[in-house]
Image 1 (cartoon, rainbow, N blue to C red):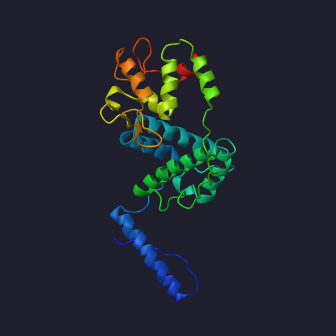
Image 2: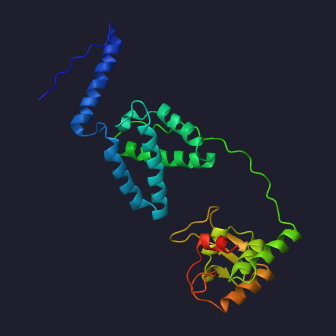
Image 3: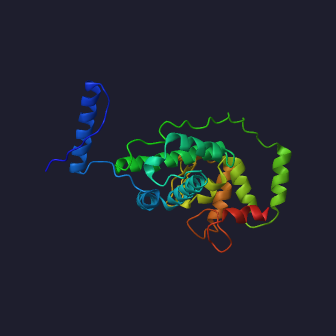
Length: 258
């Protein structure tokens, strides 16, 4: 069976021949099951999130849920909201970018654009759309970071005085001061991350956490070694810093104690 197609192209034969070839290619793709399948957003979003949950950590998948939720909320505010993937074009993504910059930091907007790029790239891979609408969107330039400010001796003294006698708080502050580690890195540090011979701490990716700056080694001075050996005598779990009951320290709990 051959399908008959009639279409008005224009007065020029060469253009008509090219258009004819394009139609023939599209028809061949349809017969071979290779033609684009323009999916509804409401159908595609659950499919993509299932894909993400299968291939990323739970914390990463949660971020994708949030980003796609922000995009969906924005699309609903448009005068003519798109309901199919093919209707989301670069100008809409650009509008979304400027909408979000009014609400969150530039680095957050850039992260969301990265997530959305993957969101639409998967749609391209599934043959739902031809081009990724985020591909041509430029990220927001980040301002240059200010040089870090180091605490003066008086500030360190006052900080340690604030710790008082509260469980593990003074040790936590001293470890942070002497290593330059982020709080999240210290909180995730485990006893097997310590190399006593080389006198270094290994910042490693964990099952439910990954360091922002990537894996690295942190030198261990005498003060740090002394604190760690003291804490080792009270070892309750695999984590170096624990609560009095032996569970991992919560982020909010530490700062509440200040």
